[in-house]
Length: 198
Image (cartoon, rainbow, N blue to C red; front, top):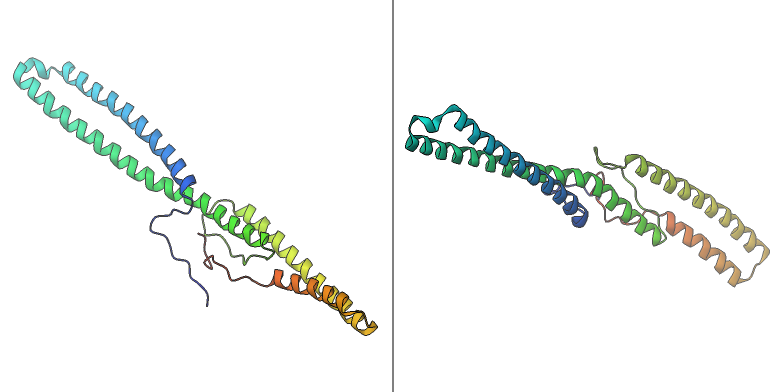
């Protein structure tokens, strides 16, 4: 029965990679927003001085200036927190579109290291490295076809060897070659979901 792809609530497949680059994005966003906020607050205070709020009455001016400064400070802090949250989620989504295909390809390579061909399925829409994945798919398909041709040829050799009365040890060696290639091209029980990326 085919497994169906379930969308992850938090798109994390490679913690080290995704947290590293999302953290870098958040650090840059936090630094730039903090510097910008500092200059905005400074400009706001200078503007109030120019307008002359303090000249109306020193006590009223200071009170208005302090209240307005608190409001501006709150707006800047909430904007910074909102920006960090939005960029954090966006960073995880973007890095997922890079890390997902890499994780899928790494699992496919591991399957090939074990002497089998992986069950390939397309990447999700929007994933990066689609051309590389397509080239990998062509490589696997062509090699699988070459192994199928070799199996056919080996079967002919085995049939000819049997008719010539070749010894059992040689026949066992030939049969082992056929079995190895047949096992290689058989689809493995994939741990990856069908029809989607990681």
